[in-house]
Amino acid sequence: MGDFFNNVSRYPRYFITITLGIFFFLFDKLKPLLKNPVSAIALIGVIVSGFIFVTLTLRAMLGLPAV
Image (cartoon, rainbow, N blue to C red):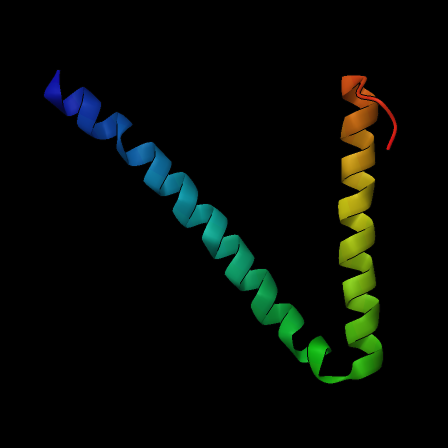
């Protein structure tokens, strides 16, 4: 039974490692775009608009009041 809990305790660490790896990979690929001011503003706009889109979509799906 101890081996079972040992294996189950590894899953959160695996999930965190995979998530951080994806974020580091994406940041490494997008880092050159931050050197040019025009592309940096466009990248920030895409990230902010994506966050707003996801937020509004989740609020509508969950039936929460409008902002």
